[in-house]
Image (cartoon, rainbow, N blue to C red; front, top):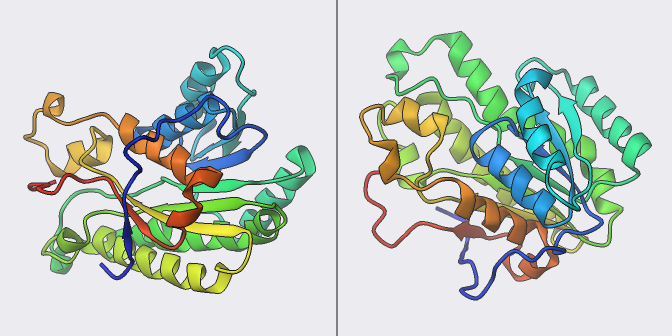
Length: 261
């Protein structure tokens, strides 16, 4: 792990208006951490853009947010990160500017992992698509939205990492390489924006009850693993001005003894 480590302030809890008047784009919003982050951000007052491959998968999240009292109406933003061209990312940024006039944050929660596979058995197609969703897409989306983010007085990009010690082990394949590359991307972007209004953050959640974890730890009892709610609250913290001291750092949510997960 090359990034300096930060921890969530012990007395911090998401306030109802901590993201008021902010527009937040969340990828992978149909499930897992993306869905939890969308709900938590909306409760904190943000207008949330829900991005995922298919509109149908986003509709339940949209309905959950729309049913919350007093929150801004969310926006459906279907987008296939795996298949989108650079021009489509630019078109998305232009659409956000045209419809909403601003963008205050991006949460890169989308992920692709088909399970643990030795490199010798990993298909070239799986290697390319996993790296694209996990590394190239976050770069392309952030780059396309940079001017919108820099135009705000305070904005943030949140990259979600995974246990760096585990990512270098056997069988983690393209997913492990993508997560290692994502840390490097965040470090470089922070160096290039440290004196601007754009904050770069990385988040290392504790083990979460998600589809990705079920894929990797198939024999695990889901009831023994926490929901993504705590990580989603940390996302709200990183998106808010309260996290200025954590810019360029990795917010580590794991317990000191994090076991296998």
